[in-house]
Image (cartoon, rainbow, N blue to C red):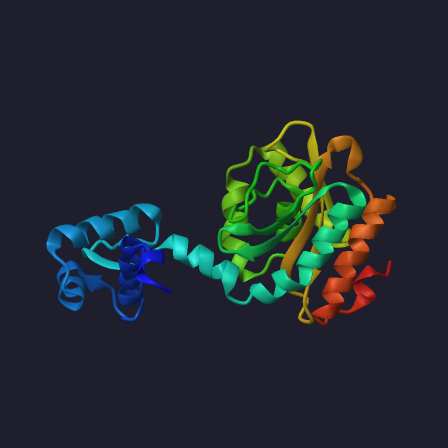
Length: 253
């Protein structure tokens, strides 16, 4: 690639991230300056920009380390890329055959994270984009809470603490039902008159590795597993889970 096709400032910023990442311990400003030979004013501007984006963090002792945004992006990429590749054809098929938006969310410390969205021309979504953490009151959140592992425990406790008692009690019932029936159907809190239906993707250790969700106007979204579309999505969840070694016995009533 020629120099004309590069954005020099972006390249410098990325090299700064590599410098910080390559050291086991957080670096002081002076240490970064010695390594990079940048002027104080330029280095300060770059570090401030990276900090405001969330790519790095300033620690209480005035050192710098990688930030929460990189951790979030890393959670998408590390160990999830193969899942996304497997699920994308299914999501596109779901959208084509149902006319509904279909998305994949994966568990992260911040909750279920949208990793891919397949949207038809006439479809709608829940107001979320790739990289968005979904709240527990969504169907994706309910399924994630029902099959949560250690990665999601802190998120689960934090989400519950924000809910009023009556909402929390209903949510816990929804989580219990999702655990029992392997799906959740919820009216979405982010967009009016929109609902969603979610199923878990589980691996051979019965761990949640993702959730498939369909989204549409409330009247079009199934609320029971007996609905043809509900059965269709559950069968897809079963097929993908089987690919990761999870036994089909969970779907036997």
